[in-house]
Every structure is written in C-alpha cells, then in structure tokens.
Image 1 (spheres, rainbow, N blue to C red):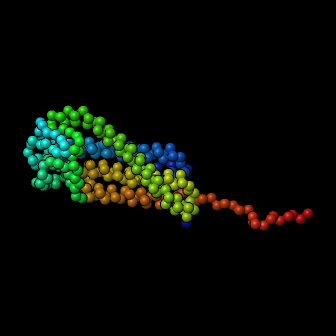
Image 2 (tube, one colour):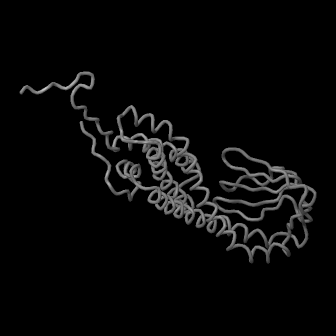
Length: 273
C-alpha cells in the first residue's frame, strides 16, 4: 500500500500529514507555528491565573493582620492560627503555624503558611518549602494591598512571557533529544530525512499535544474537568507527541532511488563498425 507524500506547504500541525510537511519546510515556518501555539498556551495560562489565582490572593490580603512578616526563615503572625484566608474550587490559602491539619482540604490545591515552612497540598500529596533565611518578606495587609494593586497586571504579563519562552525552549530541547531516533527510523524506513529535517519533524510533532493541553487548561479552569481528568490529559499529551512523531514518518516522501546505468565493473561494449 502506498502512503501519500507530504504536502509542499507546511501550515497546520493537526494531522500526521501536516506534521510531516514541516520536515521539508524552512525553520522560520516551524518557528512561526510554534510561536502561535506558545502564544495560545500563554493566553490560556494567563486566563487561568486571572480566574483562579488572582481572586484568591485578592480575597486573602484583606484578611491579613496589619503587621506581620517573614524574617530569618520564620513567619511572624500576630493573628489567629489556623486561619482560612481564601477558598475556592481549585485554590485555598490558609495560615496554620503548626500545620495541625485542622483546616481540611477544601480545594484541588491548598497552600498553607506555617511558622517555618509553606506547604502545598493536593490529591497527590504535599510539597514543603522553607522560608528564605536571608530575606525579609512583608506578610501583612498594609504592605501587600498597595503592592498587589500595583503589580498584579505586570505579574500576569510576566507569567505569559514565561510560558511562551518555556514552551519554545522545551520544544527545542525535546526535538534535539528525539532527533537521533527519528533520523534512525527514517533511515530504515527509506525516508528522505537528514538531521535538520528530522529535528523539524520532531519539533512539529510536539504541537498537537500542546494544543490538547491548552484545551485542558481552559476546560479545567471553567469547571468542565476535575483534577484527575486534568492529570490524565497532562500525561496523555506526551504520548500524543510520540504517536504523531512516528506516524508522521509514514507521510515523509521516500528517499530517491539512485539510478545505476550499466555495470561499473565492466568496460562498455565497443560498437562494431
């Protein structure tokens, strides 16, 4: 059965044929499409942070005491403990100096400020970090209210820029890691692929999974997915990249067969007069 060859113009990374087309395209075309997908991811993450994270912080700051700070790796908290600062479907913020567990899990992610550490609880367990010992961090209403009002939009923009740069760098790194097996498989499958084309093919194959994650972030933030479903999609988006990577090889044109005219080990026959 013959496999159709890749189209001459690379413009969409949604199908194996479209991914295969980027192998023969210029790097600028792949970079443009990667940037568009990274920009979509940044918009989705910024929307998620603005919808989930910012309202929780905005609600928590007025509940902080007028004085309080993190100094020498310890939280100076003059208020009650434990104290629930903000809660929602996805994010909860609270203060529990002894991490006593009196405030049970009320959201998918619970961030708890203790006397010496901050803990992040979720369905998968918890992570714990020590406060920085060399810095003084304000942890009170009087200092954080004007600071939050002045920097909220800037933080959102910086988060979007970080997502764009993080996506591009991770895709370039993964494409470099995938290059040897892609080129080797293309060689044995008799596909017209050199190292550069293999790298571009690997970079394009990562985009369908990234688009799936963009949709998952929007659905999770909108309440259409729970945390378990979101975690499943997060793992599946890597597998989708591998599937596209190998299936797209079938749509890369075959390597041209060299034409051998005559037997190079025998001299040509002389014409009779």
